[in-house]
Length: 250
Image 1 (tube, one colour):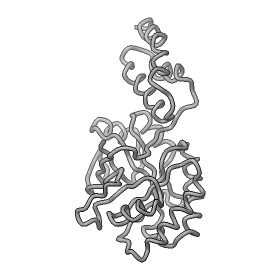
Image 2 (cartoon, rainbow, N blue to C red; image 1 turned 90 degrees about the horizontal axis):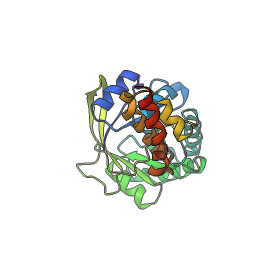
Image 3 (cartoon, rainbow, N blue to C red; image 1 turned 90 degrees about the vertical axis):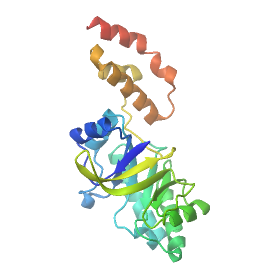
Image 4 (cartoon, one colour; image 1 turned 45 degrees about the vertical axis):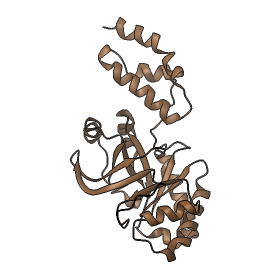
């Protein structure tokens, strides 16, 4: 599965361009309001959910913040939780914390403590780390978190067997924005917003004629995936009513 990460706000036009280009996930920042230039906002969640593009959440303020240990991890965990609630990120999905520098082995104890302290504040969410090959390997072996997003930077050509996501190239122009290219190997903890509607309401909301059939089905499937506990049969039991509605309006 191919995706990007970026600091840009994802608008309707960018979302459609990403969908048309075949990108399936976008990594965006949970960050406090003073970092508004890169902060994920609710309108982006609506756009990405509409186009069936998964959101990967990453918390980062400054590049080397994780090396300051548990006390900072607790603060950042609280801030990440507040931001996740603002954008309606569902429990069960993942929040990555960035180690966005060439971390030395002397920092590993502090990074581990940072991640574990953040996790205490984020009960119900999976916790991940973004970093180099060595950071990924070390935090995986220490069981500091459950998910791993590796960057090629500082990795000396090595790819960790633990990586759920691999950031493979920086500074690429996609959909008119400057971004980084990533690939997911599965279980990356992505999410979309789950509307507080019944499945029948979701289907009807997104379909009023035959031309919108595909959009209707995509909306239902994406919502089911976001919820994580709704089977295919739960969706398809509403299809007879939907089919009747669509063709009665043709």
